[in-house]
Amino acid sequence: MIPLYQEKTNITKHARKILRFLEAKKESISPLLIVTHDYPDPDALASAFALQYLAENFYGVASKIVYGGIVGRVENRAMVGILKMPVHKLKAADFKKYNRVALVDTQPVFENNAFPKNRKATLVIDQHPSVERPAAELSIVDTECGATSTILAQCLLLLRIEIPVRIATALAYGILTDTMNLYRAKHAEVIDIYLDILSRSDLWVLAHIQNPPRSRRFFMTLGQGIQNAAVRRGLIIANLGPAENPDLVAQIADFLLTYKRMSWAFCTGRYKGKLYASLRSEKPNCDAAQVLRDIFEDQASAGGHGLIAGGSFKIKDADHDESWNEAEQLLINRLLRRLRIPIKGDFYYPFRQKLVFQEKCEGK
Image 1 (tube, one colour):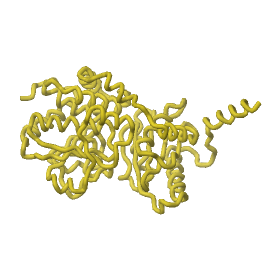
Image 2 (cartoon, rainbow, N blue to C red):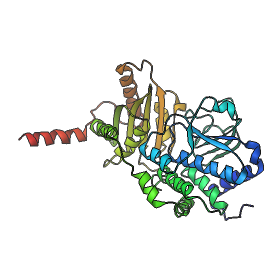
Image 3 (tube, rainbow, N blue to C red):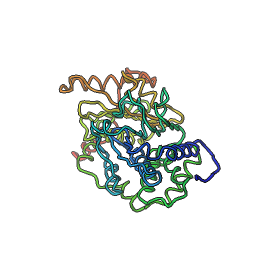
Image 4 (cartoon, one colour):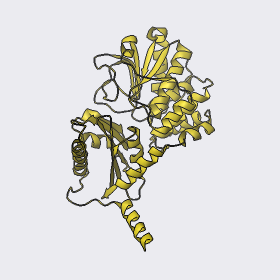
C-alpha cells in the first residue's frame, strides 16, 4: 500500500498515479523499453534510471534504458560513468523487440526522439508543454514540477524505502540542473523533494559530476564562443560553427547569459548536418520555447520550458558554408524581429575589443 501523504501540488498526485499504474500492470508491461529524448540531459537520464529501479525492484518489470544521439556534455558523461547508469544507445530493432515503451522527459509527438509516431506508448512522464495529449496508457505531464526527476523522486519517497545512493544522487543532479539550481522551482514542494532526495545522495560524487575534467577542445570551443559573442540591446549571440557535440551549444548559451545586463542569450552550432540552436532568458515569466518556435521554419523542431529552449533542423547543401551562414543569419534576423530589436544597426563584440586593447598596450 502507498502511504497517504498530504498532497500539496500535482507532483504528489502524479507520483501516486504512476505507482498505481505500475501496481496494476506489473509483469504485463514487461519487458519495458524506457526511452529518453535524444542527446539526454541529466534530468532525462536520472528519470529513466529511477523509473527502471522502481519498475524492476517493486513491480517485476524488466526494462532497458535507451537514448538517441550521444551523451555529449562532459558532466553528463561523468554522471553516467560515475553512477554506473545502465543506459544504451538506441537501435532500430529496439522498437520491434519491445512492445511496451515508456518515454521520460519527452513525448511521442516530439521531434527529439525516434518513437514511431503511429504507436501508442505505455507510459509517458514529462514536464514539457505539448499541443496535444500524449497517446499513452498513462500520460503524466506536469509543467509545474521543475524537472521530470522531481516526479520520479516523489514516487520513491512515497514508498518510504531506503533509496539507493546512486539513484538519489542522479535524481538530485537531475532536479538541480533542470531547475537552474532551484531558480526555476515554482513551488516549495519541488525544493522539499530536492532536499529530501539530496539528504540520501553522495555529495562527494555529486561534486565530482558537476566539476569533471574537461578536454582542450572544450576550452577551444568556449573560447570561440566568447570571441564570436556579439551584443545588441540585451541580446548576446554566438555562432560556434562545428561543435564537438550539440550539448555544447546549450552550455555556452547558459554561460553567455551570465554576462552583465543581458536579458537573452542565443547560440548556434553545427553538428552532423544539423544546425542546433539554444535560447536562454533571464526575464521572469517569459516563454523562451515559444520565442524559439516562432523563429523556426518548422515549429515542431523547437521546444523547451520557461527560460530555456532548444531545437535543431537539417541544413540543405550542408557541404557548403554558405548554406550554414544563411541559416544562422536567418535565425538571428527572425529573433531580432521577434524580440522587437531593430535589424538595422551594428552588434558590438565586447570581448574582442578588450583583447585588441590589451594587444595595443603590450605593443607600447
